[in-house]
Structures are given as structure tokens and as C-alpha cells.
Length: 316
Image (cartoon, rainbow, N blue to C red; front, side, top):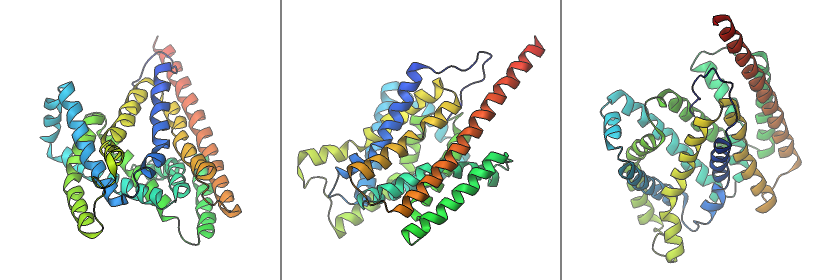
């Protein structure tokens, strides 16, 4: 996620920025429906094709925009390539676990992963970046810990799908934040899929020998749906990049909650996944933690804007 550049003009919500951001998060929220349409393909076949067709589509976009020079310049930087290799491992884990969750009817638990992702991001800031938490952030982290304990009781085990999704995406976001200034979204996704391609090929070979591939065996619509995985992956990413450039970081931080809300509502009210009372309690506690975290974010953002305005008046 990229933050908007500093400006003396107060940050305003761009209409096009809102459309791009809500479009991106809305599409991400509808991902479970798309992946459910890919059955009877297994999660490992789906991820294998997702990687390969994402690489093909990204290469097409780079060819159209004539950005090969930028891509090769990034690839010439060994340290940057290794960093993006780590990002590729993290996003591979995220993709694979998410699709396993969707195709095993555990969309509610996958949505929980993205609800707690902002909390995980805060914790990573402390552990990795040595950031100091404000009091309300500590409160949010404490409340979310209680929620995980409640959900562990509800599931009878640690909600590993949620925690894996939150941790992998949180670490991935941390790396993207550090490389965002030199690596654009499409070049980044291209290089990450290049790193993942050998894994995708091996994965598809194993699936072919064990249970068989479904790409050509279930009609043209199924083939087209699998082949569209590259477009489905890249389009919301491009829309997110366009939205992030036009909106304040606080707005992006709030809009991101729309993705797990869409997924959660779809799982509970459309697909009728079970939600026993204890699980509702756990989710409610998480939502309280997010309200606390969002309140802190908005207060801190307002304080920073006032401080900048005071500094500009002093300079003038």
C-alpha cells in the first residue's frame, strides 16, 4: 500500500479514488464466489494456474505499456530481487491457504484473517520496525488476543487459517511498503509470479499425476474461468494502486474492511456457513478491537494534519 505524497493542501477524498478503492476491495471481497466456480479443480491446481496466467497477463500489460526497461532495471538489482522473492513466498502461502479455505467451505474463517490483519500489521510494526504503540493500539491488540482465544474455544483448535492469512499478508504488506517507492504494482506482481512459476509447474505436474487436471475436462466455461485467473488477480491490484495514489492513507485503511465484510456476509447469509453463538462472540470482540484501532487511526491522522498546518503557519 502506498501512501500519498505530502502536500500543503488538506487531503480530500477524490471521487475517482473512492471508486477505484471500493472497486478493488469489492472485487477482492467477491473472490470466494469466483474460486467456488472453479470446482472441481483442487486448490493446488487453481493456485498453479493462477500463478501462470497472472504472469502471462502481467507480461501482456508490460508489453502494452512498454515498461520492459523498468522491469529489467528492477531485475538487475540482486538485493531487490531477493526481497521480492521473499514477498513471492508470502503471497504464495496467502493464495494457497485462502483457496484451500474457500474450497473447503471455511470462508468465514478466511474473512477473520483479513479482519485481524490490521492488528497483525500493528504488531509487526512493534516487532520488526521497533515502533512504539499508542495506548489505544495496545488496547486493540489486547482485545484481539482475547478474541482469538474465544475463537479457539469455538473452533476447538487454533484458527490457523485466519492467523496464517493475517500473518502472511501482513508480512507481505510490510515488504511491499518498503519496496513500493521503486517497484510499481505490475512489475512487482510480474517478478513475484516469475519466482513462483517453478513451484506452479511442479504443483500442476503433481496434481496431474495424482488426481488429474480439470483444465480441459469440464467444458469451455470451466477452461475460460481458470484461464481468467490472471485478469482476476491483476485488475483489482491495478485499481487498488490507482485508488491509493488518490486517497489519504486513513481512507484506504477504512475501506480495506469492506473486503472481509463482503466475504463474511456472503459466507453466512448466502452460503449459510455455520456460525454458532460462541463464534459470533469472537467476531464481535474482533470488531470492537477494530473500532478502537480505527478511532486511534483517525485521531492520530487529525493530530498529524493539525501539526503540519501549525508548522506551515510558523514557516510562513
